[in-house]
Structures are given as structure tokens and as C-alpha cells.
Length: 124
Image (cartoon, rainbow, N blue to C red; front, side, top):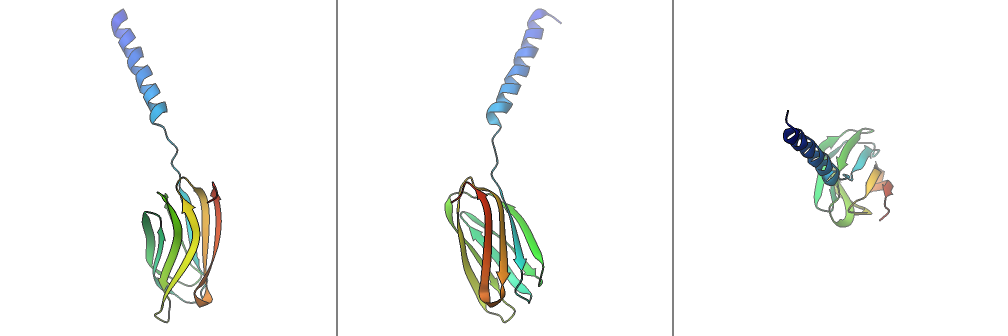
């Protein structure tokens, strides 16, 4: 290997290493758990958050649903589902902001109520 070829190999390796440091970025995620404590099965569960939503077709009583998401923008979390009696339930939750991360527990309770337990940084 010539001296010039060896220099190119080292230069190429250094360029790749510095590019990986520059492009390395932190990905902010919220790990959410929704628990059905309503005492009955629910249908069409959906959680809307700034820029997107997630959900599941049905959730049995005392069952949990886990989802990991990333917030773009800011705004309130909204949860909706169809209760066992056929009525649509809509509940407003906490404000979410871009770059939040951590855990969010949502406990659906009887009577169309819910408890929200956010453990997020930075706080909204």
C-alpha cells in the first residue's frame, strides 16, 4: 500500500466517523399504556395527539394496550372510544409538546372518566 493510498483510507475513515457524530440525534419518544378499567369491553379506542393518532379495535376489561409515539408540534391529547352501551366517549388529556419523552399512563374508568399519569420531560 502506497503512502498516498493509506492516507486516503485514514481520511475516509475519519470522514465517516465525524459524519456519524454529526448525524447522530436523539429520538424523543413517549411510551404510552392505556388500561381499560371501565368494567366492560370497549371498541374503537383512539388516542389523538399533535400530528397523529394511534388506537386499537377493541380492548377487553382489565386489559392494557401499549404504544410508543413521537410528538410533532404541541396540543392536547384526546382519547375516544365506544363504550359497551354503544355511546362514544371523548376525554381530553394533558398538553403534549414536541421533544417530550417518558411514560404516559392512561386509565379508563367507569362513567366515561379517565386518569392521566404523565411522567414526561420536559413538562408541558
